[in-house]
Length: 248
Image 1 (cartoon, rainbow, N blue to C red):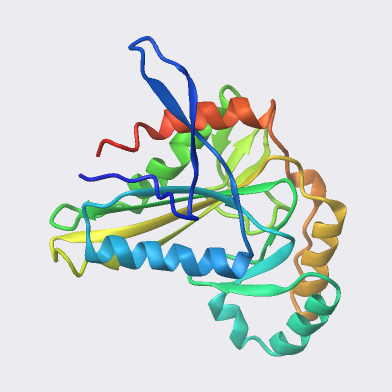
Image 2 (cartoon, one colour):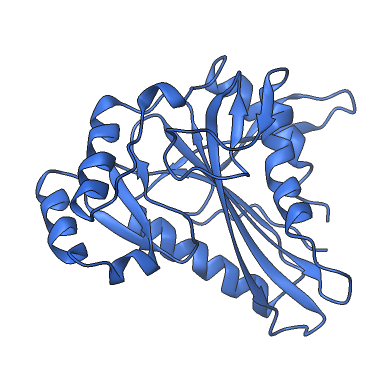
Protein backbone atom coordinates (compact mmCIF):
# COMPACT_ATOMS: atom_id res chain seq x y z
CA UNK A 1 0.00 0.00 0.00
CA UNK A 2 1.29 3.47 -0.84
CA UNK A 3 0.94 5.55 2.31
CA UNK A 4 1.26 9.30 2.49
CA UNK A 5 1.60 12.07 5.00
CA UNK A 6 0.04 14.84 2.98
CA UNK A 7 2.07 18.00 2.90
CA UNK A 8 0.89 20.90 0.74
CA UNK A 9 -1.21 22.76 3.34
CA UNK A 10 -2.54 19.53 4.77
CA UNK A 11 0.14 18.37 7.14
CA UNK A 12 3.68 19.51 7.77
CA UNK A 13 6.09 16.85 8.95
CA UNK A 14 8.98 17.84 11.18
CA UNK A 15 11.96 15.59 11.81
CA UNK A 16 12.20 14.14 15.28
CA UNK A 17 15.06 12.71 17.33
CA UNK A 18 17.48 10.20 15.79
CA UNK A 19 16.44 6.57 16.07
CA UNK A 20 18.73 3.60 16.65
CA UNK A 21 19.13 3.01 12.91
CA UNK A 22 20.35 6.55 12.34
CA UNK A 23 17.09 7.67 10.71
CA UNK A 24 14.93 10.39 12.18
CA UNK A 25 11.27 9.82 12.95
CA UNK A 26 8.67 12.28 11.62
CA UNK A 27 6.90 14.19 14.37
CA UNK A 28 3.25 15.13 14.05
CA UNK A 29 2.49 18.82 13.77
CA UNK A 30 -1.04 20.12 14.22
CA UNK A 31 -2.62 22.13 11.42
CA UNK A 32 -5.13 24.85 12.32
CA UNK A 33 -8.05 25.61 10.00
CA UNK A 34 -11.75 26.42 10.06
CA UNK A 35 -13.91 23.47 11.14
CA UNK A 36 -16.03 23.65 8.00
CA UNK A 37 -12.92 23.50 5.83
CA UNK A 38 -11.58 20.57 7.88
CA UNK A 39 -14.80 18.60 7.45
CA UNK A 40 -14.74 19.23 3.70
CA UNK A 41 -11.14 18.06 3.53
CA UNK A 42 -11.99 14.85 5.36
CA UNK A 43 -14.55 14.04 2.68
CA UNK A 44 -12.08 14.99 -0.06
CA UNK A 45 -9.53 12.58 1.43
CA UNK A 46 -12.19 9.85 1.57
CA UNK A 47 -12.98 10.48 -2.09
CA UNK A 48 -9.27 10.38 -2.93
CA UNK A 49 -8.79 7.01 -1.24
CA UNK A 50 -11.95 5.72 -2.90
CA UNK A 51 -10.46 6.57 -6.28
CA UNK A 52 -6.95 5.38 -5.36
CA UNK A 53 -7.28 2.71 -2.65
CA UNK A 54 -3.52 2.31 -2.23
CA UNK A 55 -3.39 5.75 -0.60
CA UNK A 56 -3.32 6.22 3.15
CA UNK A 57 -3.63 9.56 4.93
CA UNK A 58 -3.07 10.42 8.59
CA UNK A 59 -3.86 14.04 9.40
CA UNK A 60 -3.87 15.96 12.70
CA UNK A 61 -5.76 19.22 12.98
CA UNK A 62 -7.54 21.72 15.20
CA UNK A 63 -9.95 24.58 14.60
CA UNK A 64 -11.24 27.75 16.25
CA UNK A 65 -14.27 27.27 18.44
CA UNK A 66 -17.37 25.89 16.78
CA UNK A 67 -20.01 23.23 17.20
CA UNK A 68 -20.17 20.27 14.82
CA UNK A 69 -23.43 18.35 14.36
CA UNK A 70 -24.35 15.28 12.33
CA UNK A 71 -26.06 16.26 9.09
CA UNK A 72 -29.25 14.45 10.08
CA UNK A 73 -29.73 16.94 12.91
CA UNK A 74 -30.37 19.71 10.36
CA UNK A 75 -33.86 18.24 9.90
CA UNK A 76 -34.74 18.87 13.55
CA UNK A 77 -37.41 21.49 14.24
CA UNK A 78 -35.84 24.84 15.07
CA UNK A 79 -32.36 23.85 13.85
CA UNK A 80 -31.79 26.90 11.62
CA UNK A 81 -32.87 29.35 14.32
CA UNK A 82 -30.78 27.61 16.99
CA UNK A 83 -27.72 27.51 14.72
CA UNK A 84 -28.09 31.21 13.94
CA UNK A 85 -28.26 32.07 17.65
CA UNK A 86 -25.16 29.99 18.37
CA UNK A 87 -23.25 31.64 15.51
CA UNK A 88 -24.19 35.07 16.85
CA UNK A 89 -22.81 33.97 20.24
CA UNK A 90 -19.48 33.00 18.64
CA UNK A 91 -20.20 29.29 18.13
CA UNK A 92 -20.83 28.67 14.42
CA UNK A 93 -22.48 25.31 13.72
CA UNK A 94 -21.07 23.02 11.02
CA UNK A 95 -22.53 19.77 9.70
CA UNK A 96 -20.56 16.56 9.29
CA UNK A 97 -21.18 13.39 7.30
CA UNK A 98 -20.66 11.00 10.23
CA UNK A 99 -23.28 10.17 12.84
CA UNK A 100 -23.37 10.65 16.58
CA UNK A 101 -24.24 13.87 18.39
CA UNK A 102 -23.07 17.47 18.70
CA UNK A 103 -19.38 18.04 19.51
CA UNK A 104 -17.32 21.14 20.23
CA UNK A 105 -14.17 22.38 18.54
CA UNK A 106 -11.77 24.98 19.87
CA UNK A 107 -8.78 25.45 22.16
CA UNK A 108 -7.57 22.24 23.80
CA UNK A 109 -9.22 19.98 21.20
CA UNK A 110 -7.11 18.12 18.62
CA UNK A 111 -8.48 15.86 15.90
CA UNK A 112 -6.88 12.96 14.08
CA UNK A 113 -8.26 11.75 10.76
CA UNK A 114 -7.11 8.40 9.36
CA UNK A 115 -8.20 7.55 5.81
CA UNK A 116 -7.35 4.21 4.21
CA UNK A 117 -8.93 1.24 2.45
CA UNK A 118 -9.84 -2.29 3.48
CA UNK A 119 -10.57 -5.52 1.62
CA UNK A 120 -14.33 -5.85 0.93
CA UNK A 121 -14.00 -9.53 0.02
CA UNK A 122 -13.47 -10.40 3.69
CA UNK A 123 -16.12 -10.27 6.41
CA UNK A 124 -16.52 -6.65 7.53
CA UNK A 125 -16.11 -5.85 11.22
CA UNK A 126 -17.02 -2.40 12.57
CA UNK A 127 -15.25 -3.36 15.79
CA UNK A 128 -12.02 -4.04 13.89
CA UNK A 129 -12.29 -0.61 12.22
CA UNK A 130 -12.74 1.08 15.59
CA UNK A 131 -9.88 -0.95 17.04
CA UNK A 132 -7.61 0.40 14.29
CA UNK A 133 -8.49 3.96 15.37
CA UNK A 134 -8.84 3.60 19.13
CA UNK A 135 -6.02 1.22 20.00
CA UNK A 136 -3.21 3.63 18.98
CA UNK A 137 -4.81 6.37 21.09
CA UNK A 138 -5.14 4.01 24.05
CA UNK A 139 -1.52 2.91 23.59
CA UNK A 140 -0.34 6.52 23.52
CA UNK A 141 -2.30 7.30 26.70
CA UNK A 142 -0.90 4.26 28.52
CA UNK A 143 -2.23 2.74 31.77
CA UNK A 144 -5.69 4.05 32.61
CA UNK A 145 -6.93 3.99 29.01
CA UNK A 146 -10.16 2.12 28.27
CA UNK A 147 -13.15 2.27 25.96
CA UNK A 148 -16.87 2.68 26.60
CA UNK A 149 -19.87 4.86 27.41
CA UNK A 150 -19.43 7.85 29.71
CA UNK A 151 -22.69 9.31 31.09
CA UNK A 152 -22.68 13.11 30.85
CA UNK A 153 -20.10 13.21 28.05
CA UNK A 154 -20.83 14.96 24.75
CA UNK A 155 -21.50 12.61 21.82
CA UNK A 156 -21.41 9.63 24.14
CA UNK A 157 -20.85 6.19 22.65
CA UNK A 158 -19.42 2.72 23.05
CA UNK A 159 -16.24 3.73 21.22
CA UNK A 160 -15.27 6.62 23.46
CA UNK A 161 -11.65 6.41 24.49
CA UNK A 162 -11.55 6.95 28.24
CA UNK A 163 -8.70 7.78 30.57
CA UNK A 164 -9.02 7.14 34.30
CA UNK A 165 -12.77 6.65 33.91
CA UNK A 166 -13.52 9.85 31.98
CA UNK A 167 -13.92 10.65 28.30
CA UNK A 168 -10.72 11.63 26.49
CA UNK A 169 -11.70 11.05 22.85
CA UNK A 170 -14.81 10.63 20.76
CA UNK A 171 -14.72 8.65 17.53
CA UNK A 172 -16.68 8.36 14.29
CA UNK A 173 -16.45 6.51 10.96
CA UNK A 174 -17.52 6.92 7.36
CA UNK A 175 -17.27 4.17 4.74
CA UNK A 176 -17.48 4.27 0.95
CA UNK A 177 -17.00 1.55 -1.71
CA UNK A 178 -13.76 2.24 -3.58
CA UNK A 179 -14.40 3.36 -7.14
CA UNK A 180 -10.81 2.56 -8.09
CA UNK A 181 -11.07 -1.07 -6.98
CA UNK A 182 -14.48 -2.60 -6.32
CA UNK A 183 -12.91 -5.21 -4.06
CA UNK A 184 -11.97 -2.51 -1.55
CA UNK A 185 -13.76 -0.03 0.72
CA UNK A 186 -12.52 3.42 1.70
CA UNK A 187 -12.62 4.28 5.40
CA UNK A 188 -12.51 7.72 7.03
CA UNK A 189 -11.90 7.36 10.77
CA UNK A 190 -11.98 10.45 12.99
CA UNK A 191 -11.14 10.96 16.65
CA UNK A 192 -11.67 14.17 18.62
CA UNK A 193 -9.12 14.23 21.46
CA UNK A 194 -9.23 16.44 24.54
CA UNK A 195 -5.72 17.73 25.06
CA UNK A 196 -7.33 19.81 27.82
CA UNK A 197 -10.72 19.31 29.46
CA UNK A 198 -13.47 21.16 27.59
CA UNK A 199 -13.99 24.71 28.76
CA UNK A 200 -17.11 25.64 30.67
CA UNK A 201 -17.95 27.92 27.73
CA UNK A 202 -17.92 24.90 25.40
CA UNK A 203 -20.14 22.90 27.76
CA UNK A 204 -22.55 25.82 28.05
CA UNK A 205 -22.66 26.18 24.26
CA UNK A 206 -23.42 22.48 23.81
CA UNK A 207 -26.20 22.57 26.37
CA UNK A 208 -27.67 25.78 24.94
CA UNK A 209 -27.77 24.33 21.44
CA UNK A 210 -29.15 20.95 22.50
CA UNK A 211 -31.72 22.67 24.70
CA UNK A 212 -32.86 24.86 21.83
CA UNK A 213 -33.51 21.67 19.83
CA UNK A 214 -35.60 20.22 22.63
CA UNK A 215 -33.06 17.70 23.89
CA UNK A 216 -33.33 16.73 27.55
CA UNK A 217 -29.76 15.43 27.94
CA UNK A 218 -27.20 17.61 29.69
CA UNK A 219 -23.45 17.63 29.10
CA UNK A 220 -21.28 17.69 32.20
CA UNK A 221 -17.74 19.05 32.21
CA UNK A 222 -16.80 16.57 34.95
CA UNK A 223 -17.34 13.64 32.54
CA UNK A 224 -14.26 14.62 30.52
CA UNK A 225 -10.50 14.61 31.02
CA UNK A 226 -7.47 16.07 29.27
CA UNK A 227 -4.01 14.69 28.53
CA UNK A 228 -2.12 13.12 31.43
CA UNK A 229 1.16 14.72 30.25
CA UNK A 230 2.46 17.25 27.72
CA UNK A 231 1.19 17.28 24.14
CA UNK A 232 4.57 16.73 22.49
CA UNK A 233 5.21 13.51 24.40
CA UNK A 234 1.71 12.23 23.65
CA UNK A 235 1.98 13.05 19.94
CA UNK A 236 5.32 11.25 19.74
CA UNK A 237 3.75 8.12 21.24
CA UNK A 238 0.68 8.50 19.01
CA UNK A 239 2.78 8.63 15.83
CA UNK A 240 4.62 5.52 16.94
CA UNK A 241 1.38 3.71 17.80
CA UNK A 242 -0.17 4.43 14.38
CA UNK A 243 2.95 3.04 12.73
CA UNK A 244 5.23 4.21 9.97
CA UNK A 245 3.02 6.09 7.49
CA UNK A 246 5.38 5.21 4.64
CA UNK A 247 4.42 1.55 5.00
CA UNK A 248 1.07 -0.08 4.43
